Structures are given as structure tokens and as C-alpha cells.
Image (cartoon, rainbow, N blue to C red; front, side):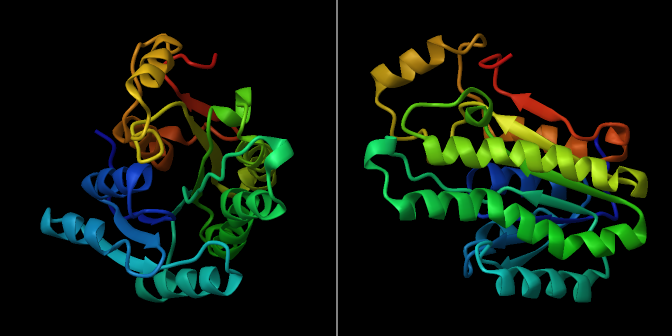
Length: 246
């Protein structure tokens, strides 16, 4: 079993879906979790962790606001004196074909899915460099590897996150910090909940394993990358997609 005892894990977009499961799984592995989301949206997952005997705190965070990121990181550092693991999970979709896509739909997705990773890493990197240990885990998407019609903005943001991950990994490898990206395929979340049965069946038939993934599948990969067992893995794209992209 993965052991994250003593680690401080900072997770963005931790209130639901994949982010929630990452928070729950890291806490179960012994980590102290800073569950970050807008306003008080992370309170329910923090309550669930604390009731189960784990340790977690809800942190108000808007990843598109640099001041909010700085304040959230300062809060965690003041409280726990360190941040060992950063999970950049916050993300949105604004799907539309390019000819109809509004500039703000492009800007919003890039700001939330890609620029926020830059902002959050910049805020936590100096403490990680000082302690000479850290894990940066970015949550990408199979769409960033394969593309997808109607998701130009989303695909660009996730493809950009792959390049960001590989470049950063090279910059910080000598200081004991690893940087990787987990790229989920089609996962059972709010984004897939509204699929009609016909669309769902067609989608499942395109996945070699014949099913959509679960948020827990992604959380398992994240916990492994957060652990000491992954110490010689950096700059990698870890696909959690049931064979959808190889």
C-alpha cells in the first residue's frame, strides 16, 4: 500500500470528481490534504476525510487569480511549514467547434487548465527547492494527446500541459523534485454523466477495456507518483485510459 504519511498534499479542484477522489485517496494513504476549491466548495470532502480519521483542511482558491493562489499557498505553508506534493487538477471545458468558438471560451479554458499550473507551481516551487524534495503532478487528458473535434481549446490546454511538464521536469530534477502528468481517458464524472445511452455505448466500444474509467483509477496513479516509490520517474505522461490511446 502506498504510504504518504507526513506528506502535505496541495490539490486544486478538490471538491468533486477526480479531484475529490485524489484528496480521499491521499488522505487514506496518510497524507495531510489541503483541499482547494472556490469559496467553501471543498468543505464536504474535508469533512468526509476528517470523519474517517484523516487530516484535511479546506482552502478557498481561484486558480485563475494570482493573488488567490499566493494567499492559499501562504496559508498552507504557515499552517504546515511545507508543501510536498502539488496536484494541478482544476479544469473546465467550454466545448465548441472552432468556427463558433468565442475568444472568451478559448481564454477561460487556457487560463484555468494551463496558466493556473504555471501560477501554482511558481508559488510552491521555492519551498520545494529549499527542502530538496517535491512532487508536481499535473492532470492532463487523453484529448491532449489525440485531439478531439469540438474541443480545440481543451485539447490545446492539455497538450500545452504536457510540454510544461516535460520542461519543468528537466529544470528541477537535480533538486529531488519530480514532475509528471496523468492523462485520464473517459472517466465517470459530471462531464460524462449527461451522455445518452447511444453515445455512451459508442464511446465504450472505442475503449479496449470496454468501459469508462473511475475517478479512483486516476487517484491511484496520482498517489503512486506522490510516493517515494516513484522517485526515478519524471517528465512522463501516465495514461489512465483503458487502452483508448496507446
